[in-house]
Amino acid sequence: MLCSPMPFRSLDPVRILATAERLERRVAERFPDRGLAQVAAEVVALARGITTEVAMLATPLWWLRGLVALIVLAGASVFVWVGSILPLREVGQEAIGSVQSIEAVINTLLLAGLGLLALIQLEARVKRRRVGRGLHGLRSIIHVIDMHQLTKDPVTLSPDFTPTEASPARDLDAVGMSRYLDYCSELLAITGKLAALYSQAVPDEGVAQAVTDIELLGSSLSRKIWQKIGMIDAATPAPKRKAR
Image (cartoon, rainbow, N blue to C red; front, side, top):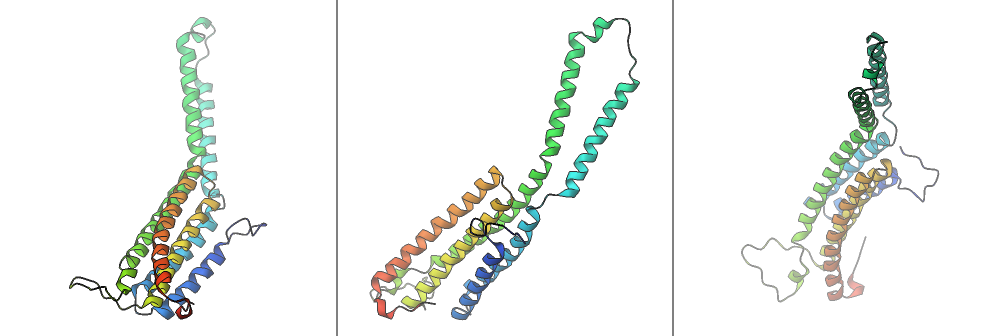
């Protein structure tokens, strides 16, 4: 569990999970026989996994740091050992100071430095790979949510609408369709907050950009949903609207 001394400046994964679980119950109570209830359950499953994962990502990978330290010590020992067995020349000191010798030393130091830098950044790469897998799951569920709202068209509520043989089943009234779309929007919002947990746990520029892409995707789809809700609201008298 992530604990923050400033609870109003950071996201609490436990509360996000609680919000997702409550939304799942709301969807299941109102639409028990629809696929959206299963989608909400999948979002809760993702939220549980992400809550556990971000707690691990927020802590250092001590086993990996220990491995890197051992590799660095081993490399330094090899350099010292090689230096101790090389014959020392007392004659021909000009050869030691030659351009070839200086270039070899510089190349060796550069390679050693690059190797050390790669080892130091190894932990960040491991965490970015884990974050990438988690964000891929969120991106997939976002598209699944969008698929569930595609056929919920306010135009079909018009008495002048005539379905065709290929038209999907339209069994929602204005209130039901509005609630269905609202739940889709809430699910998209939760996926955005779950993505933000990754950038909060791993303060990396690449992770932040990937999380931003997820949030923009969810926001763009949510805007389409709210346009539909606005059309329903404009055509439905306010006293007949009932929400939960």
